[in-house]
Amino acid sequence: MIYMKKYVLDLTVVENTRLHANYCLLKLTADTALPEMVPGQFAEVRVDGSPSTFLRRPVSIHYVDKALNELWLLLQLVGEGTRRLAEYRAGETMNLLLPLGNGFSIPQASVRSKLLLVGGGAGVAPLLYLGDTLKQIGFEPEFLVGARSKEDVMQWDKFRQTGTVHVTTENGSMGEKGFVTNHSIWQNKRFDYIYTCGPKPMMRAVAEYAAQTGASCEVSLENTMACGIGVCLCCVEQTKDGHVCVCTEGPVFNTNQLTWRN
Image 1: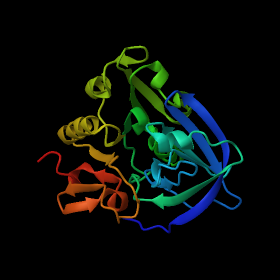
Image 2: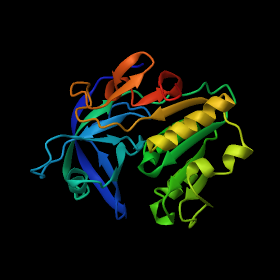
Image 3: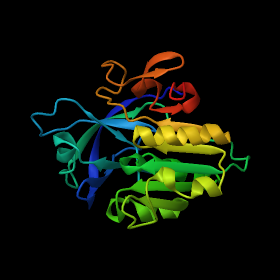
Image 4: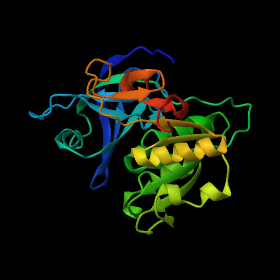
């Protein structure tokens, strides 16, 4: 576990792009260099201009463009808070507490490991930065992305620039039809490391596959995280070492730490 200094920053919106009726991509910057962030960490975003939204909203760090000094956030619009954030325009200021939590572990670059990054729905958000980080140190990551339909596959071109992308859609409009757990890749390939984020049933199935094949598996849990600093206890998860706060001990866990397979 690495403890990193946390910052409360006012960042400027560079761009807000509506990718889908329920998703938008926010690009934020600062006058000074952004703090160091690792794949798998998240930010707590203050929601201004929403009288009924009192708590910050946890959002995965989607990507960090160090050359442009930009932080990217992929937002799923699920309530008044996130819908208000989706209304921010270029030039406006957004307040964030970051970086929070612990990220994914990065294998030794000297070992030629096969890596699979599995995302379902909004769970693809933390995997882009992870994939890019792995690529930068010499790995060739593969992505397995699941969505309801072709229109729900987010950031397709950006993921393709980072690694090989496999897709499943529930209606068969793109890639193979079905859920990510039904994709033929599970029968055709073996991986040394698997990283996943998305609905818990999906992550449990991926963890089971990893256990059966001997792959190391890390999951990014999406428990409700109201404060992000381990105070509110909304995000508690049972592990083999007892109950822990996902926001401070996670959100990334090796599945060996969890009680899912007990």
